[in-house]
Amino acid sequence: MANVTILGGGTWGIAIAQLLNKNGHKVKVWSALEKEIRVLSETHTHPQLPGVVLSDEISYTLDDREAVSGADLLVMAVASSFTRVTAKRFSGLVGKGQKIVAVAKGIEEGSLMTQTDIISDEIPQADVAALSGPSHAEEVSKFMPTTVVVGAKEKETAKYIQNLFMCDVFRVYTSSDMLGIELGGSLKNVIALAAGISDGLGYGDNAKAALITRGIAEMSRLGTAMGGKAETFAGLTGIGDLIVTCASMHSRNRRAGILIGQGKTLQEALDEVQMVVEGVYSAKAAKALAEKYDIQMPIIEQVNLVLFENKKAIDAFNDLMSRERKDEV
Image (cartoon, rainbow, N blue to C red):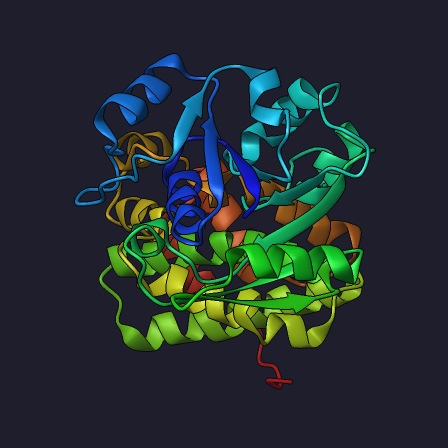
């Protein structure tokens, strides 16, 4: 049994808390939001996980020091846009070599850092890993079969986290390609926005299949140029996560895209989804990385134009379809 603290009381953090409690670990959930902790501790439910009753064995805290003290593993589960401020908040409390696994997906605008880069930047003494894959919180919290990948600089760290998380409904692979894992998990959210926009425009399965296929091509081109492994993008955190995020109504990125395709503004879509849409925060960073590494990413480019420069969604699709003739590979 391990002592695990989940930093973040959102749906993904709570799903992981449920899973690790099922695995026999002592689980504590920390949040900076007093109302969130009160609702979780009093009702043993999360308002965005209907039908899920949380174990009475999970504890909750608002206290930073209590959250970190004695924890064998910290799970950084806040939304990616809050990772830096949270890491900075805990930087003085984390011990040398204390393990932190990042489970959010996103690239920081401006610095262009991944989640583990941000954590290592703010908490250099920590032993940092990344866990990602096709894993909707709505399904994990109900113990539905799920498979993910964990990556770390030290193989023993990856194996340690694999052993904590793995069970009959949650299969965990290990990988040394931490960069590829994180890029796949971040970039697929932007492609999923495009898939949702396609749905909102009323396009069909052919268009979605094209976006998934050409999307993974864009992700792979950038990822390998940055030092990631090609096979990572053909795996669970690449094509696997891309498929589920583009196809499922659990996907907040797809839902936001559908609303934008139907004619709503970005802000109207975000207000209706009422959850953090990670692809919006990663879109500008993805475009900046494409420019930095001189990689063609036409889908990413058009998503940025629709999100931030008021380009009509239908015009973006027309421009993608009318690009110059090319060989596929």
